[in-house]
Image 1 (cartoon, helix red, strand yellow):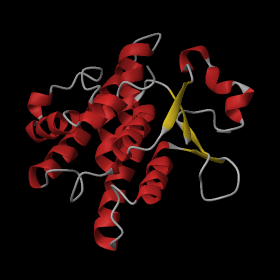
Image 2: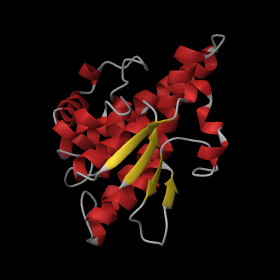
Image 3: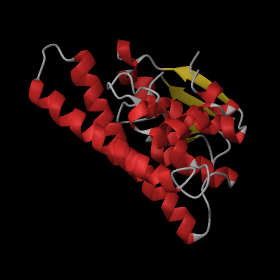
Length: 205
């Protein structure tokens, strides 16, 4: 059994999607980041960085409860645990990892900054809005060009798609019209039609 500590954010939804795709039994525990619950001592004991998501695997690779944080690391761990959605052959494996790292190092941070400056900042900061909007659109272009030549971000549906989908699901938050990126839209609709993705996007209830 896996305990998932999460909230209704793109980073949290990556892991719930993966758990649903793999059919692994898990219990979701809501950590309300709007109320700073991620700083509670009980959660800090699981993730010293006070971020969601985090998991505790009671059937992990080491004796006792196995704690793991950082969404990308969790996705790789679950893929290796189940033998799914991350190839073992070097070429395909690293193609998945490179697109996962693009999400971790580019899509997530940049889209997140757009979200903040458009929706949460206490004052308008035109320079920041322009900077992060421009970079967000550039990244959509990177994704669109890749998806023009491949059905998925890597060779087949993988943890890279699961990681990226919840961020693209907030395209309206960063004022991006998917019609401008037709290959992303095609991919977005196909991934969103997967039953496990639909279920994972609803976690926590």
